[in-house]
Amino acid sequence: MALYTNFQLNNVMKILATVQNKGGVGKTTICRLLCEYLCRKNKRVLGIDLDSQCNFSRRFLTMEIDNTDLDGVLPPIHPDFDEKEDSDWDGRSSSADIFYSGQAMPYPTRIKGLEIMPGNGTLLRAVELVRADDVKEKVHDRLHAFLCNEDVQSLYDVVIIDTSPSKGPLTISAMRAATHIIIPTTMEPQTIEGLHGMLQLWRRETKRRRRGEELKIIGILPNMFRKGVALHDGLYHTLANDPGIVDLLMPNKLGLRIAFAESDHPMSEPKSVFDLAEKDPARIEAEIVCEHILEKIFS
Amino acid sequence: MSGKQKRFLGMPLSAEIAKTIREGQEDGGEINVESIPLGRIDVDEENPRRTGFSANNIGDPNAVIGDNANLGLIWEGLQNLAASIKSVGVQQPIKVYRHGDRFRIAFGERRFLASLIAGKTMIPAWILQEKPRYLRNIQYIENMQREDLTAWERILNIQGIINEFKLSGTEEMTVTLLTDISGMSKSRASHYLSIINGPDEVKELIRTGTINNIEKGGYLSRLKNETMRSKAIQMLKEGKDIKFIDKALQEKKVQNSDHTSNPTKLGRPRTRINLGHTANSNLLRIIMTSISVNDFILPSNDSLEWNDLEVVAELWKNFIVALEREIKQKRNL
Image (cartoon, rainbow over all chains, first blue to last red; front, top):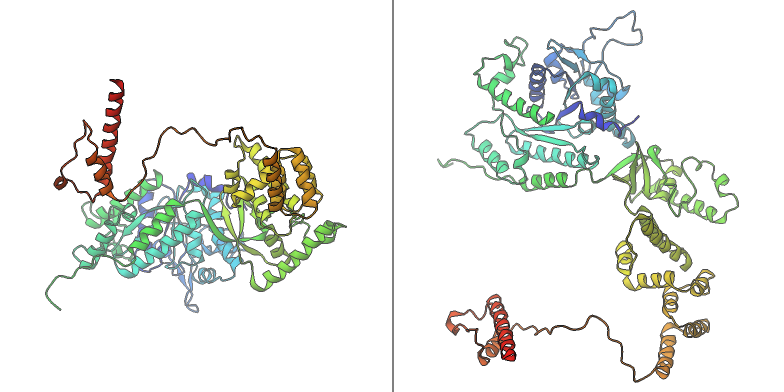
């Protein structure tokens, strides 16, 4: 397995991970928006869900629930599955398979150009709980090895990885595989603390890279921002006025808007924020942020 | 709660965050300690003091050792190290550099081999992005730290460093350079270089173990006069120390030397005189007021801050320039 030699291929396929070990700050939302936006810009996109809660998968696939297990979220039967032909396959494929067998089969979605590698709650949870050093090391490298595969490289322009709110092996594997990361952050103390944790992880990861292949931070994305709220304004002001931080602070914010949550609902119409009226503030904000990210990744 | 608007400026962590960002950006692709699988590490075949063991032959040590007593000792040492690694692990990370998709050992071959013997699968390692410059040198230097080397083996080590420098470019080995790269003291570095560049006679004495001391070797090598050197060697063999020998030789030298000859002067010829240093600006004031110089006007006491040494120093400089100019003009008249 050529783990460290194929990085040059990544110059072609971009791999973007959203990371933040504080939960509920908008990792999944920004992943979802990016998947939709990049497809609209004619990019071939693969979304990978590494969170055992599988919320990202649910945005594009109808996941099944295994009630006997707290983490029991299963991908649906793959549309290409043929019981007669594939006797040694149970018909489901998830991002966890990348860590178990090194092989996985992405699912097509309703969006043209977008394929999804959904999570499998139970299996991802098991990977996340790995403790033995040598196994952990394998987990760290596995996603990178999978994405270095020439077939994968030839099929997609961008890979978007959603991670769980943790600093565990799966998040590290996402960072190791990534060419770029985004750290969504709400302007609240717990999240800023989480931001620091992620930056420490990033520092460690980028140090182990070869020169010229450093892990790039697209930025700290202020999310769920409420203008006029003293805490939000104050913390944003602090970050924006710190010369050591401001360069990594993304120039635009995502506000706290119900439209983002609404579009997650299966009954919502339109299905995408980008299909809202042109002047809808949620759509405008999302477009500005996504365009900025697109430019950063492909610059 | 008062009606005042609440303000939340600052965040205890923001300094830490900025520091983390800076470190990540500055040292990107630099160096890092990781736990890496032993299976992806190879020994460096060019290490000057390779043990002779590797992952391939460690399972059959007797084939490697044969009747080489030295290798037998190394094997014994590895066993001891392995026992310690088994109980407390590898305490000090080894250093490796990338070689294709594998790693090669820069330092820590013994820790690596002992970990294999101990049945470990992982080892903590500093990952260097590339083969370190002067790797051989560093390995030689690391070997120098070992205590079981003879004086002659140490000299060979230094010779190795010098050869590496000759191969790698134009840099000439000097005492300063050797001090810089090896961390040894200047006097030690100077002894080594004296021996290496000195007469074969002395080297032979060290090689055979007649002299097993770098200071003595260095001293002898610096004696250019052959008669004096053989006298010194004779005295050394009689068990006299350097201090005694040096004194004896100096006395001889004084007796033989020509007293009328000029003592040799070292350094460049003196071209200027330093006027000295003082923290007492009053001294300068007295000098400047007592010598009148045409182009130099001393400001009145009130208008000058005599306690400000910067100001007085600048004034003094102008004074000297003006004084020099005037003397020159007078001489020309």
